[in-house]
Length: 198
Picture 1 (tube, rainbow, N blue to C red):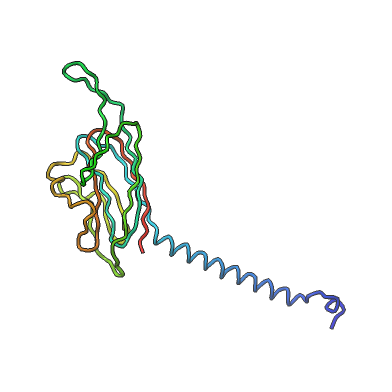
Picture 2: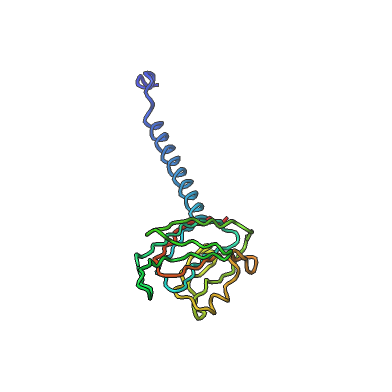
């Protein structure tokens, strides 16, 4: 043995092996993190919609039964006044109308509320798809395993469209669940949310 080795120094060959071992540990650690981020990313889905409402408009949110989600809905009311036939000026406030009869009159310029959407079922090999409906039978947002929670705004909804809406919170085909509410009047609406599909 050399005197350098006897003095506590590590031979060059051992240093190279140690560097290789550290490099492989780094690569393995990076792969583990990448895999976890990829898997988690496939569970989390953001969704958003925005638009203007007038007359009677519908805000729709649809989800796959196996998804859990929440949404923040912001209604920006314009400062519009109208004059009645007797000359009185009145502010025209949009009204949010839920299917259970609850009404919210938007008295401020900005009104924000949150909605939660519970996970209501399982689906291990789901392949179905549907869409949120719009006026005249048009499709406004695709709901499928790649988009397990979506939102849409149907402006100036027809009376036929309103009469054909399923009960809010109801499920179809034991796979899709739909939530909706009506906004009466002029407003700017934005919906931002996240869903977790597992």
